Length: 417
Image (cartoon, rainbow, N blue to C red; front, top):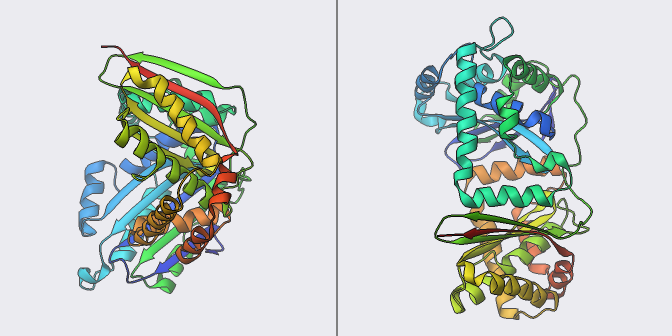
């Protein structure tokens, strides 16, 4: 990663492993609930318009000229950092028969980032209102998914910091209150204060791309300090949420806080092994026990959200099995704390994880994401180092780590036919 004179942190990954060229630009600032909805709205507008390409049809035509390129803009919360991400994927430049595909792709990206469809200090009002209406409709539609609805309720109860209680898109009230001028202001702040990280991966000419990006305007002249990526909070009293819905199955979601956890360290792999051993694998203790053997659940899994210092356990089940499943989840965590799992299972879980790391390198998106996240977290580890660390982890280390998991929130969605 090299910081250019215009403020862009540029990562060039020249490789023939991937035939396509992937370009990702992240505009990063501290995540705050007040800016969540404006930044999400801004991302929608910048994806669908610019001065050069004023609507989605013109953008689609330009992408076709770029040999079927794919373009998107999105917002993401990564720990305590908010990202507006511009992503452009181009086919192999060699198919273009002398056409400067990468250069043309970068020129298109420049238009979408730097030259939004702002006329007299506002976006066209009809366009703005249409995008706002669609944004709200899509946000509300997500709550038709009962697992998403329960997940949002669980996180709202779990997080102590109000900034962390909202989704990356904000909430319905904040979306309804969005004003045209505030989105223009969000755009100006993005260029003025955000930290910019850019990655270009694939069969590329490094020096040529570097010269092009170095000519882009100066950014982040007043960069605001970023919060620590890693979110941590003090434990609170155990909270329980109950929702009642009509449907075929009930849902359970448990949120565990990982005390004294540091995502930007080798603890990352201890957490992943703990979660995989518990429920994050088809070989896991929960999967084998309450699904395969006892048929108490339709599905069960556990996952680590490392940058938020938490673990989530989710299951779909019949409501008559709720009490037994709650009991078994806690029992299997106790088993891990006491080391009550076989050497064979532990070795198999480690093998599965290392195989996944190796195979993920075959996916360009994963490779780029790892580079960008390594820069933001300050912890860079290549696949070989990750595999070495995983293979060195002992059962005792995982058992010790599991004792730092504290159940904080349980959310239940109970079906009522």
